[in-house]
Length: 334
Ligand code: NAI
Image 1 (cartoon, helix red, strand yellow):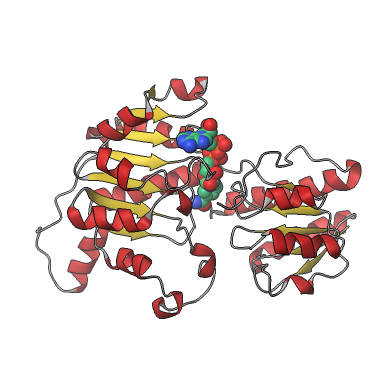
Image 2 (image 1 turned 30 degrees about the horizontal axis):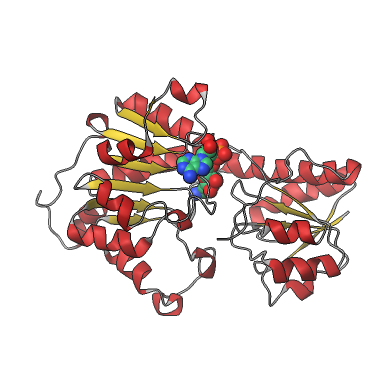
């Protein structure tokens, strides 16, 4: 099976080399993320491997189907960049990597929380300006706060384990509560979680139901001076509303590893002028907001695991036409 790979980094190529040596799969590496303007470059491939910065909308899926592509394997857990309805419409299959080192994302989540709570950005800016005073740097201790975790799945749970280690009071909300999480948090109604939490962590998938789950209305329910950390998907948050909340003091901090329109710049080199998004620019400039460019997953162990599972997914399709990690539910772009 010939596979076109999007987003492979130089240090990952040896994993593909090893897979080729095992037989059955051959690879063709693309230089840029998949989108409407370069989908034409796919030649004689039965499968493609994509990442979250690829545009797999209906137009792209239609073109892929015409070119004989049968399988779309996303090398990520989240799959909202793949128009699942279109995949189904054109009789194709898509699969993801439902879990790979969820602890990597949780550790980054806690890192962001601590950076916000201890005003790390402000502290660095003061040092760069030769200001060694304490002014503006009084932090808060994670262990003395109430945390609310929206989404108590594979990533939410290790985040709650880490929070428990700090001694934080942990509240959880999930449309499908689960037993292992119930041992790590107190499940409450979503509105109670919003009202009682000092710091809110988003660990739920982006679906039509969860789109802009944090917006004007939900922000108004939160405690004054609450902190928001989002390492799940940008579309969960109305960033213009969050910016307003930071300006008014409703939110005292915001840590985000994901941004709604990140496909335009993540994994690329771009100036703020080229990005042309005043809300994003204002958030980057805000001393209480910290951003990382979708790197929460990015550890050596997680990458190895993502590629191995993706290749195994394709081997399953090749052998049986089916895959245990087939995406079966609508999770198209919203
Ligand atoms: P999971 O499927 O194990 O858990 C998600 C949980 O959220 C489930 O328990 C589900 O019932 C719950 N949920 C569904 N809709 C919800 C809603 N509207 N509100 C609250 N909870 C809801 O998924 P996992 O592995 O924990 O991943 C969570 C998300 O993290 C992914 O969907 C992905 O968007 C994001 N992610 C981010 C990465 C990064 O590098 N920043 C890397 C990997 C995943």
